[in-house]
Length: 334
Image 1 (cartoon, helix red, strand yellow):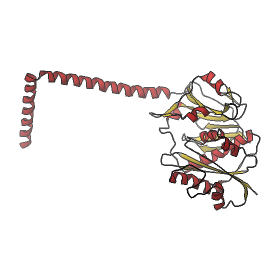
Image 2 (cartoon, one colour):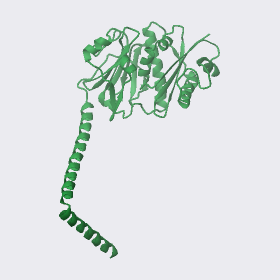
Image 3 (cartoon, one colour):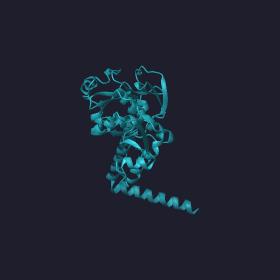
Image 4 (cartoon, helix red, strand yellow):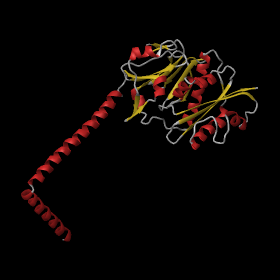
């Protein structure tokens, strides 16, 4: 009964207030009506903007008009990619090196003289690519977020969106700005990655380490050198340094305890080597991008292409934002 009485009293007060405003302040009612109409229109505009955004993503992520195909050799191995499906690795003693996503939605091609997407690797220049494809993208979208490329990225790779694909032409600054390798991935596959970096797990870490070795060996064989022997046991030292850089917030060959690459290798049992060398990388979206960046850094490139180097170990660690850190140690036994 009391609740009903309260409701009646509230209704009476509201009615009296409305009557007062209607008689004494009629403009307030007109303003309120205008405001409600404006809010309704604005709300509709927000809905339209959101819908346009969704439609834009749906249109962009449509199936490619024509699949990109590459002549490949027999499968050598498979390793997990950042896209959630395996890379199928094929090569002939690291020649005609090709990675193909298992669902055929992307690939990576390296090897001088190979032709793909109207370019010839090792011959077509940066300027030639721009004549063919125009101005490159300055960023790429994952989900609803646009990630801008750094100035260094823009120097070392030309990125395009064409016919349902993202295309990356990796430029070799130490070979007259010629194309060194090409990666292609469907827009649909790329945009399935809602974040810039893949969510890491044990398998992805192992795959990143293995792929880095494969990529280095492709570059070495192309330069007329012998491939490096992959020393999986060396990951004790390399992973530890990658993790230490994350934990202590630095990026350097000098460890947080003042140690150098030789010190860290010696401490884990590599005490009788005649060569010690180290490459570091972090922040790149995958081993492919990390390797291409290292090949454009003269000192790191020289380590990869050292004739006297025979063995290598790689250790990857991921920070809290899933950013990978790479430590690569080269050595040659006595």
